[in-house]
Image 1 (cartoon, rainbow, N blue to C red):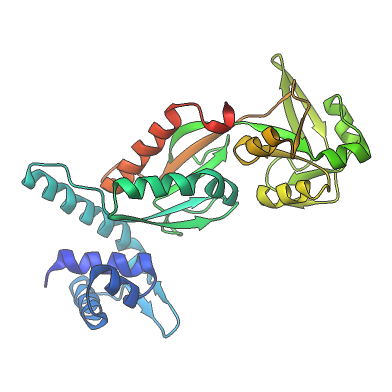
Image 2: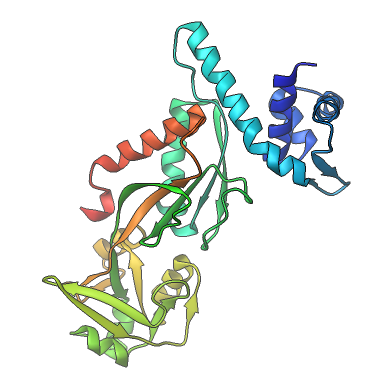
Length: 299
């Protein structure tokens, strides 16, 4: 048995969710995929996947062996690059976790540009407002906007996320323009359920301000709050990457510009530096390079 091929088949089946999809990616028949899986299980001496007509799922042994299989493939690619005397081109499928707002406003465009450079790399985006368990969700890289990092993960800071408090001209005509952070207590503030739902923090000339806000609408995704703001429902605090264009056009008005909302770090999170797949290493370098210049939304 070609154990390396069998290992690659196993990883592809897990990443793509079915034997049929893995066969298409590997240009292999479904019967051949099943044969490689059966032979790998015979070699290991245990079942790696629960198979049903509706879905595949990892067994306990399969969950334990999956990271080692990924490392095995990464080592094989590195050895191949050394033996050929040249760097191996990034290839394979990467699973990335990210919030909807950041993925939609920025990440998807960067991944498209990356694929233009490395066409053998593919991406599976997991869109979720909450932090995910990288191992359980089989995530290679998570992009999170936070100041509270999991100490068990490796984090590389990509950039700073700045925000703006904003509302539509229609809302402000009806309810007035707040002049100080304290004035927000008299307004309908649309809040993010997982961050600062009742407390909005600001700084002015290094001095902190914290304001307790309230409103009739909260959500766990900032894009939903943005749509509500655009519908004249109230005031919201939005990341600049989502609203910079709307502020320039006058669709939204930036409030309290002399008060800076709390800044958050934009971080790339992953599990280990050991045996990092070439595609993931190349993507991290690519994202850092893209953030080396000041982002458009901060200019």
